[in-house]
Image (cartoon, rainbow, N blue to C red; front, top):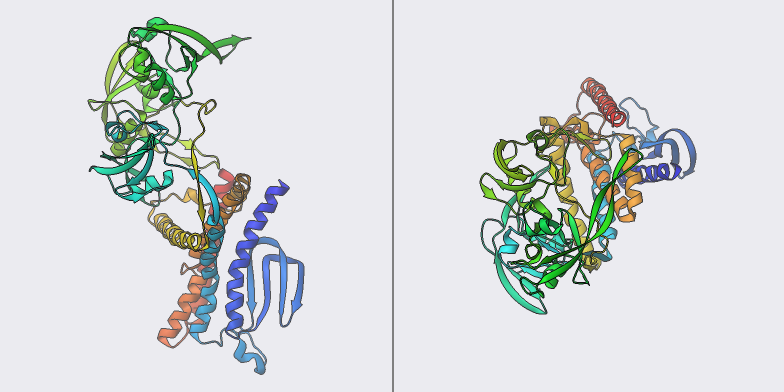
Length: 543
């Protein structure tokens, strides 16, 4: 707890210092007398005086301030210092001083991200680990083990590069250059449209159905199939074929291809068997030996089985799927009359349908059933206690352990100072735009007020990001700094944005905002901030 508290104080301390340092440095540059520079509020813990300014660290780290001479309307200064008062400065100087705090909060993340991006970093390569059987990549002949080199002539080195290369590319042929067995070839894929919806925006990208992660050789077994007759069961994981260890689907394809059709094969499979001890039930892994003749086809089909992808592993309690009578072990067959071969395809179709009704066909112990259904909200709670109710259907595929799978191939990206600065300078405006959209969403009701967090949420975020490493902590620091910068630019009384507006008003109208109007505005602004803080703390406690 003390360590987490330390990370929380470090996070706030750095951000407050950056903000107040902006006001301080520009005030000094403009010739304004600065009386006090404080990190934190309340009683002073430590401090010293240098020149005409007192520097201190106060007890409460939830903010800070720069006290300038003559920053109150009725404050009297000695004649020799009257010209150095804040309110005695021309509007453009006051505007610069006020703007400096938020500006430093928006510039500081560029510095942070520069060090995050600088130097060598490992990331996922473009080597294909899994190909979804009914999507564009499979239709184009892309196989596990292929390395994608370019998308429509645009070179890609990482899997993220490849995903970004498909933004805006869908429902039309897209040439892809790949490498297989040391040779390059060009194939054409026709990506399907996928919309990634968030409270901030919607990103439309093409999906081709590949993943960098190898797929284990887990099978789905139809009730009357040769594999079921031989003793295989759905979600069995093939460990070996004729004594040869099989690590992933690619290895299964390779080994069964060596066996002539009709020739007996010996399989070793792992399955979770139900056990009961003292009234407590559970499942323990066991290894089973199975013999069966080699069937027509490739991969799982050569075993007389199917890919386990569309077999339902679990059903969410209270979901539409549970209400329809779907149970673990059932296989999804078709949606709106179109046959399915993967959960990825099912998820893509459901994502496009949202709350619209659809016709689903699935196969269970009693045979096939067809029913008209529609996705419905289902309450979920994340790691921070945030409750949401997204539209869901409620079926989940089999989740597997990465144990005994080949390691995912990674590539090292080494960014020099120029490239790291370029990436940092590009990402900060993008995040600023997202923050502005979120604030706009709060005002129009598109974003729920329950997403607002206070000190407790920041404490949790600081602790969790610190556990994940320095880069994660620095990323959080950059995002919160941007948030502070954007928030402080809002034209709300007592925030920097209102003072900036006041300076602009005076510069244009040649007279200040009337004192009475300013006093009333400050009272209203303070009341709004108190209400906002109460909402944030209430959300924190509720979470």
